[in-house]
Image (cartoon, rainbow, N blue to C red; front, side):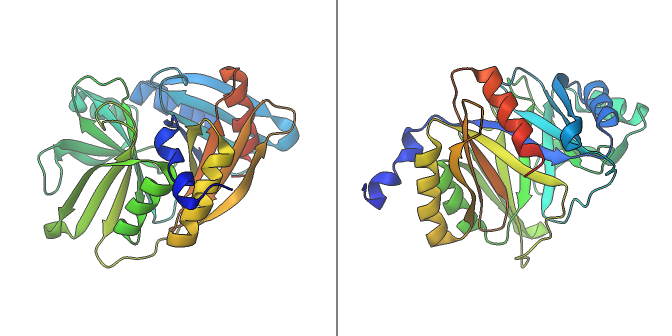
Length: 294
């Protein structure tokens, strides 16, 4: 059996990137219309599964082979979810923040924060709400290959979370900023420069150690070349820092794919997706299995 030290080296050797975020919506077609017309996303694929009473759709700014996507899940008969206090927002980078915000406004969308400098900084941002109440931060930024650039989650112990995602997921701490005037600290975690790809933004609000999760946001998915090795790493790290494996690594019945999933110390869920030869079949098959069980 390999030593813990050797096992923990695996994340640095693995090829990983953020694949998609999964969350639930009350009206799939309404959300698709909003994302395509207001944000400029593309509908990548859509599927209805009446025997399991759900439908889902993937949207993004580029192909799933290279870009991050959102997986929207609609469960038959459920038109409202509780987002909770822990989930923060998604972020979209744009070269013309004013134009995007005005497009949202003209379409009847809610502009929660007008464009202006971020608190404690100079970056120009805005916030808009989608039809289900999920917040999207709009960031003024130059050309980027990945406009869908952030998933923000609130955590109760930032240093613990940074260590967890570094050790368990092999992420890099790209940037950390403390803003004492507004009593919060953020850490950007990811696999490449935050201006080039999607990153996980962890936010700590002074003195707040617990948040409600609700039942709306589900998980983020990350690619891996070996779910068994990745799960072994997570198992070791959770014993040190907290969290737990929620699905043991293994194949999806009838598909040439493998998966494992886990919770971080704050209860946020991540799923590892193995890399299959048939990428289209791989992503399609696993995602359909996940959406009703996540």
